[in-house]
Image (cartoon, rainbow, N blue to C red; front, side, top):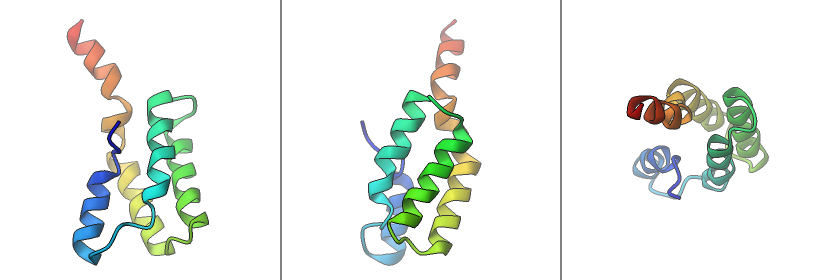
Length: 87
């Protein structure tokens, strides 16, 4: 499965010319979104905590967290929307 963080990672790579320091946390976050064993907000918070524990600068943690909170619903509800659309 391709990481959804790739979009954010590509932006980071273009801006800073290096691999994002939060890339390792993306797999955990993506798994939370697929399994949906917890709330979306809890999954996003785990992502932020993972980034913080991996010594990602706080301003990047905040920026990425709010980006995921604002646009992550598209990926969270994608399966439900697809099933609803197909009938």
